[in-house]
Amino acid sequence: MPFRRRAEKKTNYRKRLALLKPGLPRVVVRKSLSYMSIQMVEYEADGDKTLFSFLSKVLKNFGWTRSCSNTPAAYLTGFLFGLEAKKRGKTKAIVDFGLQRSTKGNKLYAAIAGMKHAGLEINVGAEMLPSEERIKGKHVSDDIEKEFEEVKRKIQDSYKT
Image 1 (cartoon, rainbow, N blue to C red):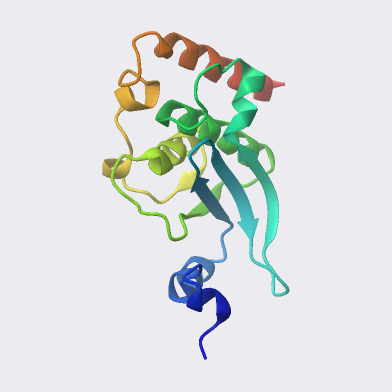
Image 2 (cartoon, rainbow, N blue to C red):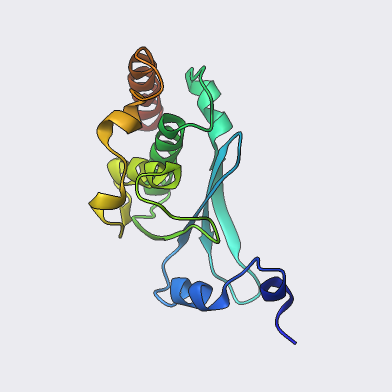
């Protein structure tokens, strides 16, 4: 009889073991139709411990008026997450996408790009990250770039103090 989560196709235990072996905290990135969720998780013998997490909805506090599920919002959420990780003394992490499909330049990698730009060391190839134009939202609309830059500046300012 297989493990329950394996039978439900929720956990791939071989991939999970490979993620846990280096001993680094995992950055768990999940997307839904409305939001992007990012968590910093550490392994413990009696169960994983979530250190902190962000939902892209928090961007509204910084003046983001657009959708919280597009590529620029994913980048900004990752950027905010990266700054918080550095503040808490976490400089390296391993990415955990779970069972989500990993394709070049998607929203998951936009969040990783934000974390890398914030200074978090994550081993992901540069060819997998979306282009600067997609990150800034030029594919969404022409006027989104100004709001993107303003929100990014507000996020940086909030972590300078």
